[in-house]
Length: 457
Image 1 (cartoon, rainbow, N blue to C red):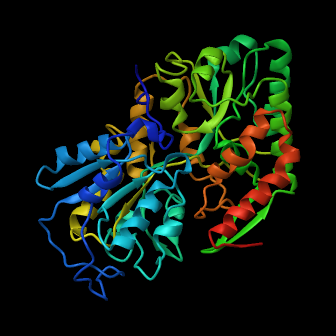
Image 2 (image 1 turned 30 degrees about the horizontal axis):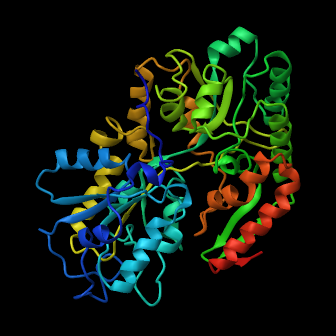
Image 3 (image 1 turned 90 degrees about the vertical axis):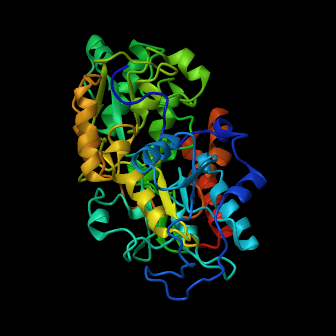
């Protein structure tokens, strides 16, 4: 099928998809080298081990990023790499951090490059742990060229930046937009909403006039990133390396929660995960609209294993504002990150790899399913998608939304998705009001933040 590659999502692979490929002692055997020979004053802003330009680099990727490693190998056959599959810390599993802590204790074993599906890993990977040097190499002190860093989409490296230094490169962006089925909307005589209030009103109309059709879902762990982040809910205000401001008792939080309660109640925003057989069976052909990230296009709509929306039907609208807000903002649902290990003994090859997989057309334009974080690649990627004639409208809203991600939702060590899944999803599925659960959510965030050493305002 034409359009965005199918069956791939930026960050939502379950650990089951790569189970058995590489675990436990196999990782220890395949990865990295020790810190013997460390220089206290590395040339790139961190201590470096003795370098060996001929050393094989070990690269950890999730299932979806194996294509990136293959593209690099094809373009750079003389660079030796060992590719190891792991779950990419999907859904807040925290496997990346857990495994690096094991290597820290052992004093060896670190991989040279790691891909993570999470945006909060720089918060811990940039910090010393137990007196050990930080895992992540500083990238903006000469290791990655400044002109390369400057060409990433504005704001895209914020999750990678701690205390003014860049510790990772974004693979792709996951800005949320409003996806809609133009054919169905035209058939029913509905106009695409331009505010969240209009969105809710249309949902109430759909419930009465076309029961069974839906305008979104609220059953995934990233539900708050789609709806509450876009409402400027102050649930995740990271104000410093170890400080967070949490306040869910605000108009911004309550308006989004109230809207979800209304639409869940009338069946137009069901509490079901988009990656379940139930969703595909019940809602194929019945999705009128769906707020969600850029990668929904290939993972859900243009995917034979999911909704499989035919070419010429899928439209894209800009992120919705709330009435009274000066401009629309949106949430961010993923967008993977690439790290270079400060322990690598072949930093040149490791940097070459991460620069290739984040900027090269051979991967980001020709192969990658998601919207590239690197702006020159993103421009070509959009042109390629539009030339496929799959979409019913221009992809310009996706481009615009890339710079509209609200910066009041930060990137702390703890996973907001894991907190939501554990604290909220079961209760919401059981029928409890999201508005009434907001204090419970706040308490859960505060508790998890404190466990991770944050001071909570």
